[in-house]
Length: 392
Image (cartoon, rainbow, N blue to C red; front, top):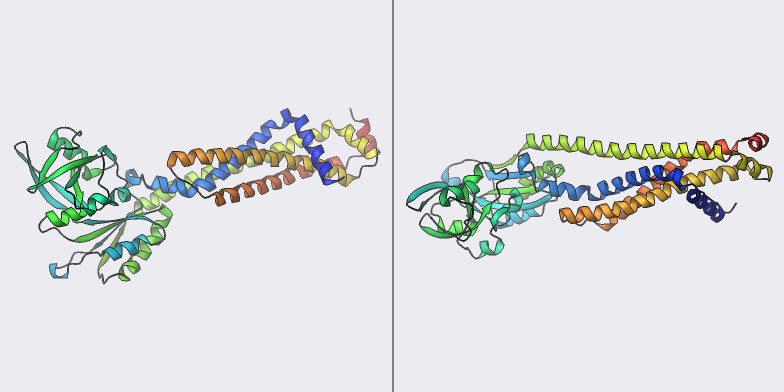
């Protein structure tokens, strides 16, 4: 039998008995779609989750600073050092900051004391912060040394009695600032009581404030933290002389996040494998049922001269077509899922990875069809002609 005829007969059998096969095809399609989605979107999902890890202790944020030393040994980080760190593999964003300054404000006849931190525009992304009111200052505000201030929610309530303070004026250490935003109160800790001004403005306006002596890095995923932490000292030393560098990593949080992620991934992949195994078992079951229901047909074909290999090839082709068709449907479902997930997390995974996953899914489906359909095909090919014709 020619391959084209074999394929045509197999497809016709699938269409004719589609009600028998739909459950098996659904299981394989869901398994394939899950596999494609998880592999294609895995990296992007990790990066998206890492932007919101404040509640988990900011596990992917690394702090770099100079250890305490006498004033005459004071050092600061150069802009070239920041650029060198940004080029490290696995680094998502880098922020430069100055030491916290004890600021004071006289507002509505009362004096308030609070912590003031000078940060650059990357600080918000590194720490995963967003604004609930107004907006956080950007690179342009930093470059023009604008007198803008962002308040923590508790500080905004203490000063103004409300969080709706965008556009209000605030005198900080005898300098007038405009409130441009209020931080969203999600996992901020003590930062609820902080005020933030542009890094360059802090250098210009705050007397006796320290130079840029702290760097914050956010890694792309928790898997990158160990590698990045190991590369940081060498990257800094290549840009400037920096003895006594301290690299601070929340190793306990990283370990906890990795453990949780490992169990989640294990559950997901186990579910996908279980779904495919159930699909394979379903193929075996329906093919055995097909062999029994078509026993007389098999006997008649053998009586007319059909060889055992041809009978075996026909049933094996039906099993492969069943799994391959289900995998194609799963690939289409996977494409839809990937596109929807990309829109939800604002990410765009590479098409190359998606196509590799589709091809791999189809190959797995073919292997599943062969493995599950082999025994029923052998049973069909080994039937005795007389017994098969007499079968009721």
